[in-house]
Image (cartoon, rainbow, N blue to C red; front, side):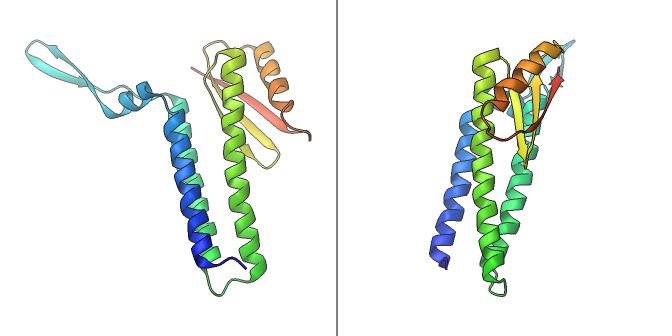
Length: 166
C-alpha cells in the first residue's frame, strides 16, 4: 500500500520533472515571441504587432494542459479513501505510463532533430504516434524515413502518422 507521504512525493516529483523538461525543451526565442510584443512607429503612432508562436509550441502547451488534467484526475483517485486498491494501482500505473511516454516523446523529437534537422512535436497514445513536423516541404520520402526512424525505437508495430505544418 502506498502511503500518503510517498504518494505526494511521487506526485510533486513528477510535476517538477514534467515542468523542468518542458522548460528545457522550449527554446528561448519561442518564449520571447509569446511573451513580448514587437512594436513599430508609423506616422507618430505606435502600432503594436504581436507575433504568434509556432504551431509546435501551441501543440506542446495543449498537450501539457491535457496531461496535467489527466494527472490531476489520477491523483484524486489515488488520494480518494473510498477508491479500491485495484483502482489506486491502476491510477498509479497510468501516472507511470504518462511519465514514460513523455520521455519517449522527447527522445523521438530529439532523434528527428538530429537526423533530419527539423523541429517536431510527437504525441504517443497507446499504439498510435502522431508526429507534427515544422516544414514547408511536404515530402513523402521524408515522411517515410521519419516513420522508419521512429519505428526502430519500438519492438511492437506502432501506427505512425506524420503531418507537415508551415
